[in-house]
Length: 552
Image 1 (cartoon, helix red, strand yellow):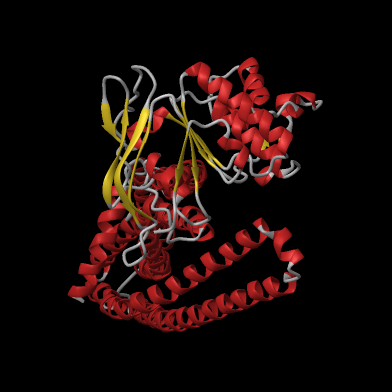
Image 2 (cartoon, rainbow, N blue to C red):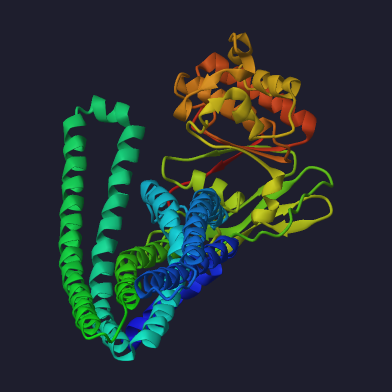
């Protein structure tokens, strides 16, 4: 038991840390829950008093007691409305805040080049696990506190009426704790398996929808549908096992609660027959039994939620294992053109792998145009990632320099770079929205100029112009059109070094030649250093030097 509690501590500590910003709602829910408990006890007291007055005929003001009872009922209804409003409105804000925190943490983490987590799995954690953790912090834990408060209050109230019976009712606690010890471990394992399968389902859905054209051309539509169906069947089996276990556990607990209710009822009717208690006290007994048993029932229903939250906590904590990038301020080199020096750089993606780059040294002189060439897999794109400081070399170093300063490549030097990646990198939305990612302050004339430089005049010729809609992954555009808009987007970003990774791979020769001429003229006028990653011979005509990278 000690070992289990020790293993839970990191999760509880993480929940406490991540709850910052959610605590207001949690405390508000707790306060409203305590008020609800006090109103329930006040209702039991008023009901007992009204029944005793009615049956004793002692002339006490019955109408006054009934009015108090009515006021308590009205207050309970109003409180229920308020709690529902708090749950819905603040609940949505809390879920959004948790997702924002997790998403921000993931986006600011170091990029390793080889993601250990599928994007579908990451999405499942961002949405499902974040919501689960938020619900437990803002609802379940406050409710648990209120349940314990209700249990203590009901026991003390019951004890004031019948001490022996109160202790008998409380004896269910050790049985509950004994069951919980076994229940928590088993349910945590079952819930973890279900959540992992949910992530695999989302990964299958996301990946196959993104590559639907490839699946259709390979004639594997039925295959991927069966793959999804088999994974869903696996999940149903896991849910069936968890439900069976939960139902049996609930049945055992229910029998214990029923026995406690029967004992109280039997004790009450015999005491009522013998004149030991009044009718009001008998009714209070039955109400208080429910007030004692209800907390245990609630804790039984809360256990799956808490266990699921612990599983979600494990999964979210995994996403925090990647360290954050250095968030220090930008280091902008501005004293003339900027150069980049690679000093004996070696890099491999994983321990034990062959190095992608080995002792590579080269000086990209300020204002120079350099073509980086080599066979596929030689490490050209890896070189770009090292310059961008997305990756760190295991040996050697990458330096940025101008006429007066020299700094090592880091996230802080990224502001000096204009990067155009290979492939289709457009976001769904309008062309304008895509271009504003390059420079949020760009006006229409600047965006149109960037499009002309990138030979993307077709955007202005379209009836919608900058407001032309682009589908997910550039849907509705050709690869070449998407590539040219991506180039225009990057050109809007200020920077002294232009990194172009196979930016003409989808263009015809005439368009390629015109784009390279436009970019070269613009870079020369701005004093930019240009690095072309390319397989195209025509690009070499615009470069003063060539860096050939071969396989190590």
